[in-house]
Amino acid sequence: MTEESLQQKAAKIKLFIFDFDGVFTDGKIHYHDGNQQRKTRVFDVQDGLGINLARQAGIKTAIITGSLGFTVRDRANDLYIDILKAGYLYKVDAYREILKKLKIKEEETAYMGDDIIDLPLLCRVGLSIAVQNARPEVKEHVDMVTERTGGDGAIREAVEFILKAKGLWQDIIDDYLADGLSAKALRPNSQ
Image 1 (cartoon, rainbow, N blue to C red):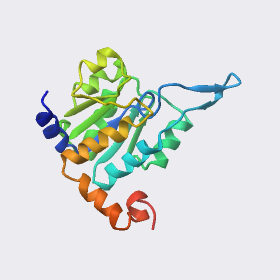
Image 2: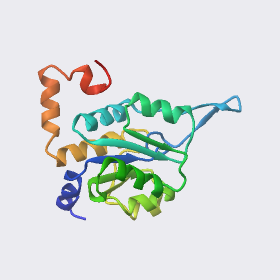
Image 3: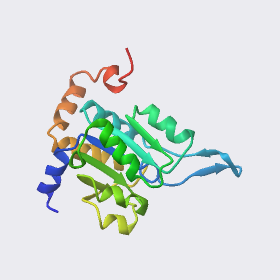
């Protein structure tokens, strides 16, 4: 795929859907003292700001993951993710529900994943993205592979690519150079 056609696909994006483990994280789960109830995941703060920048630009966000638990829900809430679909090992049903609810077309949707469970969605969306540390079988079937790995800036890289393709990146930079964004822009539920 040429850089120009990749940018054309990215310019159409209105919804960005993410897998969770391996995209928001490096895919590792740490259990404390063998206690499966006490596990941690590590997140990249720049990825978090990337989600906020996407929202600021009017792009809806969603997570579809096979994972369940407080960490997934808490991170989605922290970032004001529009829709969280947790516990979906077969992700196509959740994907269809999201598109229907938001009235968004497949070609207006980006999806980022890392493993073969993500292939059904990666082969449907308008812009398919794999993180650098994705499985080789996944990388073969996507439009774009990030330079950064999951949990280490891959989300931010992909969001910036989309915002640049939409011609919005310089406006965001200019807003920050002027005096920064209002708290409401970053936290839509604040008054």
